[in-house]
Length: 298
Image (cartoon, rainbow, N blue to C red; front, side, top):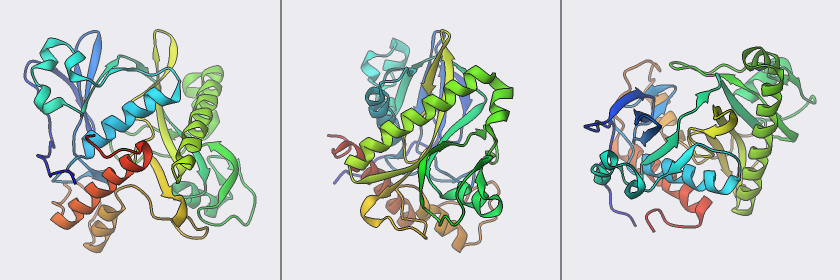
């Protein structure tokens, strides 16, 4: 069992130029490259909570590293080994180890590339009201968590604050052009299927996931995080049932707690009780173990 460690909610790396802070990641501009620092911040209902989750940032970072190496598609990662990073980064190795990734700069496409293999979440809500998801008509009579005949590409807007919104393929084509939109759809679905096949062999169902892509030297490149519990919905295969929302490796403990206290889903986020923090941390560590076959830190 790993010992609890200090939580990093906000990084302030002296000597490095802060480029941006997202809900979870802080980005530093190193000139030719970017340094992504994955903190232990947690957002639920698009609101960042007051306290962080031990090991969360490190798990997300190392899982992304695992998948970038495994998937075999062009990606922006240079290294996650702090000792191989520039000197101005190495002197902060104690803070950054396991939670920092050095990446190539990319010109990001303004869409979230979502692949769905199962009818759940916002896709289920869309289907209930329209019989379709992002304009893709589906057979009638499907139930919650039903496996789709084939995975579908259901893009979304990329919201800096607030909620992403599902959009149709035609809107993606307007934003990036027909050819690029088709390539993004093809790459999204093929990458999802490779990840889903791997997860299946590990006893997990990859219900859906969200990818981000950008251009690096003119090539469409996978960026940001990939197939983590924050960007993906994983279900233990043994607990999968149609007609319910199966238990997943994510922050559901936090959502359930916030609903119980009637949180208004507006900033600022409240401080989470120790029990909720512990259960959520354990769930991230469990996801790492299930996907890699290793205990975190070994």
